[in-house]
Image (cartoon, rainbow, N blue to C red; front, side, top):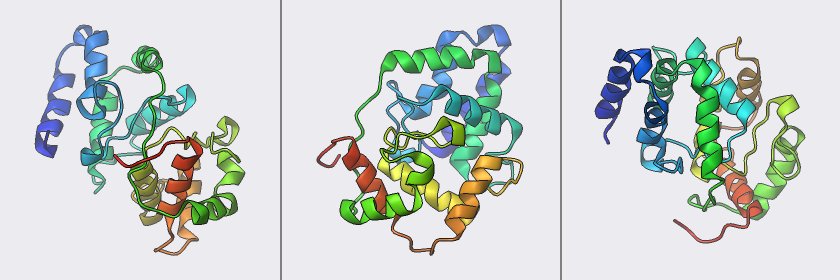
Length: 209
């Protein structure tokens, strides 16, 4: 599905009454981009949602609804689409979405990004482990998500967005702002793909998709 078609769908669905947002419609908002099994779609930069932490999903949806992510003037089109989708779903239905994702279970993450896992291991423990943990499983107290559930291409993409200011530039989004500032201290050519490769290796996944 091309960008204009997806934007049209996300703009049209909210026009229905709140009564039409049944369980089926709630999940249509997610699966139209993230896949029927929430496995993600790299071609349209829609990450996998399986295994997502309830607190992280709640914070992400709240940030989109508040305009802290996906600002109207943003050049980050996937985030703008997510803002539209999040605002189309009443917050009280978030728990149903979490239940749906929980039923799907955690899907295996396969490596798609070329990188040096040995270099990534060193860089990860130097720059990331203090927040995301030695096993990259995250830390809810620090609002640091589990990285092992993420697609490797998404790790790279998210890092670059933080570094460029497409994400985390809003100071009211405290935790995202901290990530933005942290990535800005690193060189533009920082080999985040090595870190992504190391994180996928932690899951025991092998091969290339």
